[in-house]
Image (cartoon, rainbow over all chains, first blue to last red; front, side):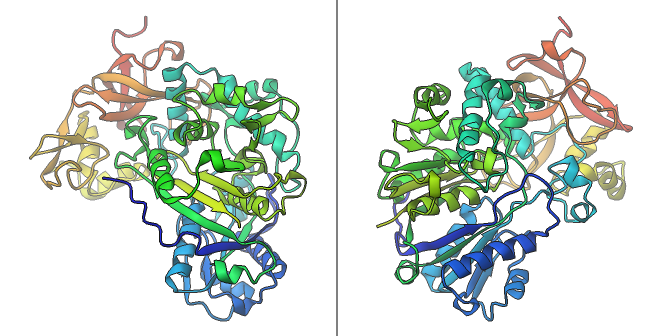
Length: 390
Length: 149
């Protein structure tokens, strides 16, 4: 099947703003709804919007659209949805609803939360323990879900003979960047020794190869580009947005590291967008596991198969101890999922918006105009988003 | 296919593995120490996990069919921690392997590896099928061909 370049929504829909509570790597005494309400009310105030200006709500099912509407007193909605993460899915659904005219202005949210599944300390919190389970348990003989990334990391090392230190560059980049982000959960400097001596969790991946479970929330306004121009911040236009999945999508049946969801995203995003990787000013590859970032760099075209580690070493800013592609393009300047906190893509998209709006503070990339977010992993959840401003 | 075990007992035995009507025959096979993989009666293609239709030709004539369980380790990890399971304490990292089965290119089955120290288990090694009991339930596993070196 040929990849379609049809994209009637191009630049017609935009982010008007984004806000966050900041993330914590400790259990807060807050519910997901409380965190979502904080991020959303903060953003509505920043954008000068009233509750009655919102007619759509979209976020993951951990906070229902109805509960959020009720909590914020949003009088009437003509559209709402609670699709599964990663977060480009929420963006696409909300933008599509706006473009189709089902609603005009959508409040979009995500709540990264320390569910009992993720950590022993979260499991000890009785309020978290009674929340619906987010993953099956009791079976070690599986490559299901997050374990699948470990399996393919192992295969990657086997096929390309990549030293583990190359994975460490992804983690160190995120940690160095997080030092400039007051909202990041993990900000202490990380050395290669720290990385290499971290506790092994699922060989070959250690604790520092895996994103940090956090409590926090992000909020976004998606509306027509026309309406966004009347709001206080520069509109960040959605130039192209796609999801990608192949038929052999079960973790242990995936054909190879050269044929999975990333490759569908790369083809479709390239066909639908007006700019590509050489045109962007900052890049947001997903980093829920270090292997995902290495494989994204290859699959989106920055380097060849198995070469991402060497590519990072060759594009390393020794002074700031971080990645700077071609001496110019920072990668996950907010600290990414590995150090800001595991946000299933919402943190990456929020930072992309702040960078393009010139609101990224000390992290600001000079004159940032275009960016790409390549979210998600190999199996059921690869995603891409091309964003730009005037 | 008639089974010697009631649906109710079958489901309660394998509920933690997510058994449903499409995978019931596979799990019933485990009780007989048979590794059953869905195969299409029209085009002979295997697929896994069990689906109600052949992904290749859309035939609904799919049947859980015995395979040898011989193959090569494609994917391999060692769990230093993991879900609670009877007889698994992770003090010795627990191996999990996805094995490319000889029956068809790209067809894999995932299970633990028994009978060899972890240092001897590696991607690319040939294995054969074996079984062990976990809480009284027959559980598939792989064993390196030739046993420990």
